[in-house]
Length: 210
Image 1 (cartoon, rainbow, N blue to C red):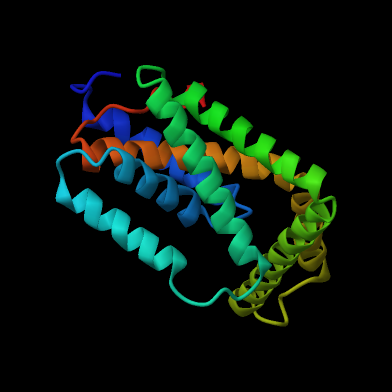
Image 2: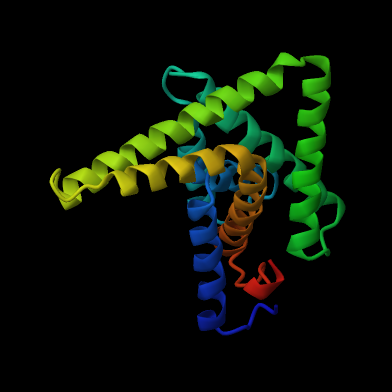
């Protein structure tokens, strides 16, 4: 994509990746977008102060406050790990398209995680547990929202069973969902960096490539 590509062709790609990141999210999508963006700006800030200011705000909001649970560490650790890999690969392959760098960052982060689990075998059990807790909390929130929207009388056991099965399926395939939402989040972070820090419209190819 060239810097002169019409804006109307770019926005659907960005919005599509944003929706994918949110729809497939197991961890907070705002962290999967915000922390890689902040790392990109810190390494390659360009000449635009608003990008630096936004990166500073993202970092402050991401790490301010006391951790409330294990998922707090997992979300931020994963976002920093994959963001660091993406920045490193971007520095090493500045002219490569986005997709190879994003997949390389995902593979590198998964490799580091696998090595950690080899050294600390209980790590996978802990990770599986905290992610399952997050999914169950999400399903409970969904059930309460449906009850509020439909009313207690109209709320059926079939809906409750469907939400429960969906949560169970999410728990079984969450590594795949995490991988897809991570790559989508990196796409949004890369576009934000190109647009806000460098003033370019380039950065993302057709959404079909994803």
